[in-house]
Length: 143
Image: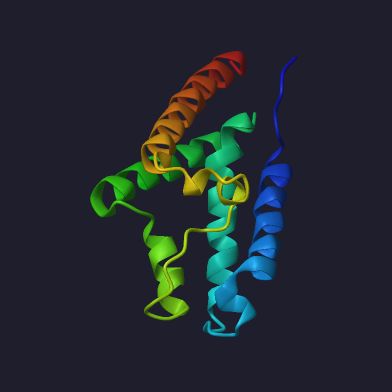
């Protein structure tokens, strides 16, 4: 059985987690955020859903773009130890607001796991390798 997701399904996951974040995020519930946070947070959720599930796509164009997301994420995590977009959105909620993005991994409870950061790096690296192999396979089959 082959499992794959279409690009709209992947982006739909991002929109769903965005709305779940709006409903559960203490900063937003208390109204302590800046209004500009909403488009930035939506973009962050779309990138996060793409990073988590994009490798399940068979869209060659999407997979090629995904390579840049994976490499960018791995480089920023290596340099900063976290996602700069998460840090930026936290700053919009005030200097004491330190929270991880409420994405699929958050709602599954994985972000509370003490090995979350190494797990996320391994997950992203594995997804990058799968994506690269799918690009090669799809490119060969299109010739």
